[in-house]
Amino acid sequence: MVNILLSIALGIIVISFILVIVRFMLGDTVVDRVVALDVLTVSSIGLIVMLAHFFGRVIYIDVSIVYGILSFIGVIVIAKFLAKSL
Image (tube, rainbow, N blue to C red; front, side, top):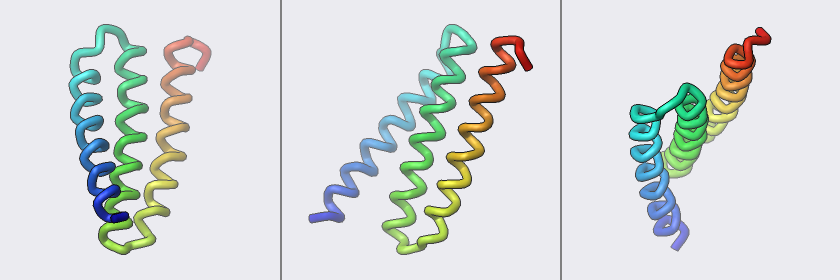
C-alpha cells in the first residue's frame, strides 16, 4: 500500500517537474523565472528523497538536505541581486 502511494507521489512530482520547466522557459519576468527555479529545486529535492526510499539509500537524503540549503542560499543571493542591494 505504501509503495503504491509513493509511486503516485512520484508521478505527481514528475508532472510538477515538467510543468515548472515549461514555466521556467516561458516566464515573462526574471522574478517568474527565479520562482520557477526555486520550485524546480523543491521538486528535485522531493524526487531525490523518493529515489532514496525506492533504492534504500539513506545517503541520498543527506544529499537532498545539502541541495536544499544551497538552493536557499542561491535564491537569497539572486533576490538580493535583483533588489540591487548586493
